[in-house]
Image 1 (spheres, rainbow, N blue to C red):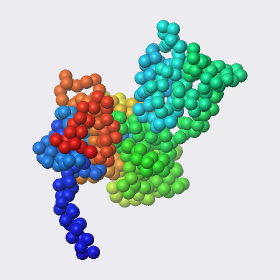
Image 2 (cartoon, helix red, strand yellow):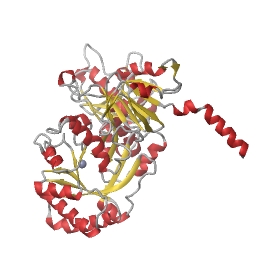
Image 3 (tube, protein in one colour):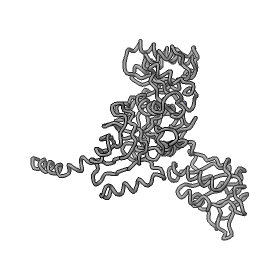
Image 4 (cartoon, rainbow, N blue to C red):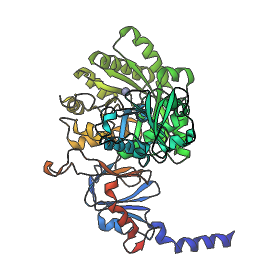
Length: 512
Ligand SMILES: [Zn+2]
């Protein structure tokens, strides 16, 4: 035993350099940390899933070892990963369950749209929908699977014509259906063939059934595939955390995806208040998992008759230590929520409970005063509503109400840039802060994420354009070049490929 300890100490000494070296280093970035103790930096280092150091290029370069991946950000903007405080995550994924090609004017557009879908869909998931028009094919061309095969090598495609008695399928779908040049036309249908007798992928009438019968019945309820789609999409937009306010209990689905290494988003999954009252199993802090539960949500439409029921349920949930979020759109619903929350604080006594008002649309000054006093978080969606433009978020902020930003996608765009640019009288920095640290606070996670700080989780994004720079340098809307979640690169934009070169040649060492 003694000998073994000596050996271990010797080994540790020999590998001291490798131990202090980071796994991932970003240099030459314009880092806006959202951390007031060090607002700006040039570089950061990641070890494991945490930020190991933040500072100058010179200081951070010292942490580069032979195995460190190094990304040169070329002066671009680096921010904490966005945390969308109000989404319907499965509905976002489900938007990709069907494709709408009716608005497209050329076959090239169709191919581009299919390529876009394939970026997010799990392999083998069906691409359905369609409504393409024959006019797209010009100069004597005919609809043919050859057009869509290259874009869809791993996903079966079944896309209907605007006239649904005709559909185009790709080679993957033909293969699954076992349709070859020997397959006979079914009664009432036609497998359209090319000059070589090979099926072109165009199917008519009953021939479509040969493929459509293979589509899984649960296509729009296959939560695992849909969640995988949603998390891939989130990564592409730099959304590293979501707070799923949809009422379904989907923790098991997210955990399942995580166990396969496919979850790229931290998920705070809320269940409905009434479900909680029935099952009492809304609280699961995660223990290191990317997915956790701990909130319940409800609505008020401003109906006073229902308020006592709401109050009784919120009281019970709050007593059990669960976080409560209630939708409040309109002056009266906000007033009711403030009243309910006020009563519950009086009854259950003070604690760090972080009640939330979802949307928090049009609260009056008296309600804002109460929200501030009770510590109620205004979980707002600047792009869905116009409150930012009218100065409402400035009023909230001035009243010391904590703001968390979100999208309410798929009601509106999931891309956080829309909300940040719609935050009106708030500065861009305040918008980013609300979409990162503000949202982290709204889910009790501000000590572990939401800023670029030493010891916090390595969740961050590099953007195409630095919108903190004066306007002339800015593109219309910045997009995400690189997304890191839990220390892993989960998304890299194709235009950012020059970074790979930097990675492969880490200051003379070949990175492995
Ligand atoms: Zn919503």
